[in-house]
Image (cartoon, rainbow, N blue to C red; front, top):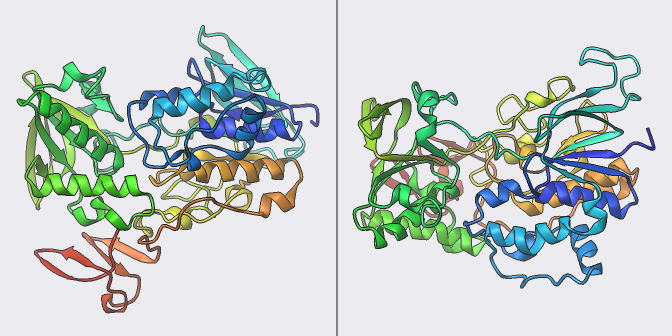
Length: 451
């Protein structure tokens, strides 16, 4: 077992960070990336500018390896795009000789188990090596044994459907070739698809806001472009976020800019609207769903689904996992990130202990570790990687010494139950924590502010 590598699934920022920490400790590593290059998912949204600056987007061990090769850190307060994160950090990191030797691109992990043991078998389980089944781009199958496995494969490959119940809306699967999922480059490579068209954006997170703002810029060039924003809820105050009080200024600016657009009637809003089915209508699509107690429908030439993502757990079917039944993160991590409890996912330092699974020496880190929670930051994943690697190397002091280099989240509050468009302190009256105005129905009253 000691001669076997630690296998890493996923060559994004967090997977590469785990590899860097392992190499720094002299460990054998095998990293599998399904895409043609590291950071393949990042490149998919490469046109998007991040709201966290460089100082929070790089990993400590990765920086040490890069600086030994003469790399110069970009300005700490500069906001990179996804493409810049790749070109100025991920690609140079992957091209270091030590990293290049352990990275296998175009290699997808399709299954994971223990040697000669299925999920049910107890005897000798902890001492048996892991076996990873892989498929290369040309279809060739492979098998690799590892002493430990770190799953940093993210969630970008499993984007959520339009259906409000978590399933594809009726008709969506047959029409998904006409629906864009994620964050298309509406002003760049996908411009011709959206210019002069009636475009519907579904979702209420940062991805949706970025798409809406880009569409408004596109409309400046192509005035016939129409924009429809469709959301399941109608608590716009929560959508706008912390504004000027947000610890990450660019994140707060996103909320302020979309707030200004709404107040200027710069886009059409359909909310609350819970999609149940999608039908083709001429050259476009019409969505049907519950709205204000009845059924309504909205037409668009194009639909962009910015409805979040979820972890792909299929490849882990033969491992013993203890996941929160709602969030699908580890059970210990869920209370720290559950969007039902946290207005904006206030970040708390966490590491090996919170990520530990019943399957010894197997960890899920990065965006996938958050399950269905939408509030992951790269700095969180880097600290996860550092702590987990320290534990796998037997350095328990370092594994437990958790530190997170992030600004205080300020306006974010963690003990609120968010329901029906308002935020109220769990088990207490709103008069105990009056922080700004919260819309409740047709009136306004003092209450804790959601961010």
